[in-house]
Length: 104
Image 1 (cartoon, rainbow, N blue to C red):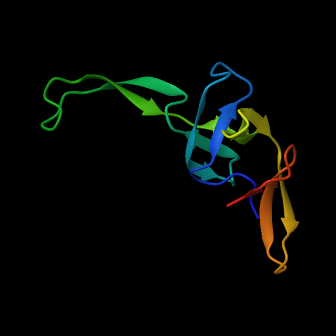
Image 2: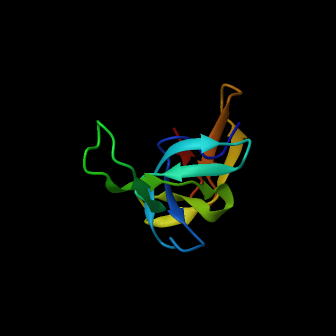
């Protein structure tokens, strides 16, 4: 079971985007990368075409390494590590290690 999933709220804990928060849009566990909405945007030059007559620049969402983000508990306003434990029905569930609250 993976600890970070799509739609989890995370906070960047290192790098040039330090302190920014957002939801995970995409996760690539094979390469240990996550794409966070509104974080790590890069400007990309776009050539003129029939769809984009003027050309110019657009913003592209780039990945972050998974170790540079941490789960953000919006109720407490702090980051926390995520753990995995068994619930009453012997299913694996994720929980926050600081507050011991289960995550859905």
